[in-house]
Image (tube, rainbow, N blue to C red; front, top):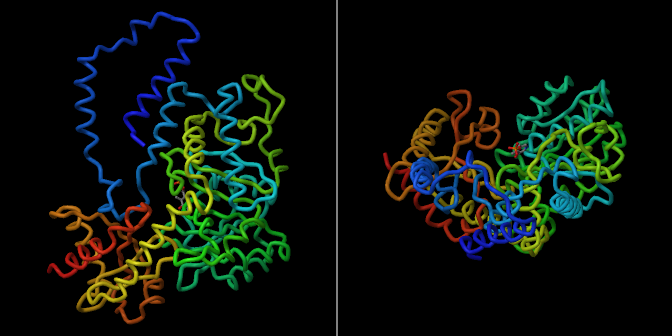
Length: 454
Ligand SMILES: *Cc1c(COP(=O)(O)O)cnc(C)c1O
């Protein structure tokens, strides 16, 4: 699709709709002449160049990529109206779209029933899940793994509940025995499992924890902010397929968070929280004298902690899902490409004499480190840092990221690397663009050259 064409169409269709209400006089206080605009815009676009090329396969660093053009056009077209999905009277069309995309997400996870909504971010979505958890278990704590996103610890403090970290195994997954030991204390009301850790993409064993839900009377919340869409590859044939166990078990959990602004091709400002039991809506109820006067239905604003929220975010996701739905043949193909890229790169790293895999990729995140001489934390750390900076600044640039590995985590995976300090940075590449699939050999060669350049 031609972005310029469809952006013009977005503006045109908005004008056509607006014209139906008859002409009105624009206020002179808002007038900007084209000459002044051109000057400001020139300065603005120059300023924007101070960015990394997230769109390009050379960028193989953090979890960043531009939205799909369909999302850009959908967002722009809706933003010209600027509906607020806080309440139905803030924009009925985008509120309806939000309900539809949320139902698609719930179906993707296999939820039989659901209550959910979009949020501005995974952080807010997780906060909402923990807020509901606290309402149900006001005096009990929350357990999450050492590798869980730091938001869980922080939000436990915000909510005034106790957070407990559970150790992980040598693949960064929650240790179920350690969890059960903690559950036996009777101090835990909610277990947070991460399906795709932010650092390495590790999947906590949701299927093994789920039976503990009944036994210990705990809620199970799944933070799939990053990894959620990978459920589309669960049980799939071919090399991109993922073990189905943990993913299919999500359907039996109490809540799940997913970020369409990570793997759902959306611009920032699009997370989602889903609850399996619609009854939890009662914890949100409030009476606002200002809004909610057009319908007796439960409004989105009545089931979310945030108030104003971009209806455009729902519109963008809706339009994207019309074209690339959250199904194995839709978005699944996009994620499969990144997964194959990660596996391919991992195989090249295995065969490399200068680079070594830190942990085999669970999803589309590759982690690796230079085989330094001497092979010790301090040398690996310094070389990783040097490669990161040289990669960005030299000709034929390549953009990667670093991940801090603790001494324990590093030694559990690579006991042969001398532990001469308290851990080391390793290199990390998130291959979330399907285009990475065509670029892996070049990326690998470039990284090998960086590793050997003294
Ligand atoms: C990104 C992420 C978050 C935080 O989400 P934001 O959208 O950045 O606020 C929480 N948990 C996990 C596992 C994540 O990857």
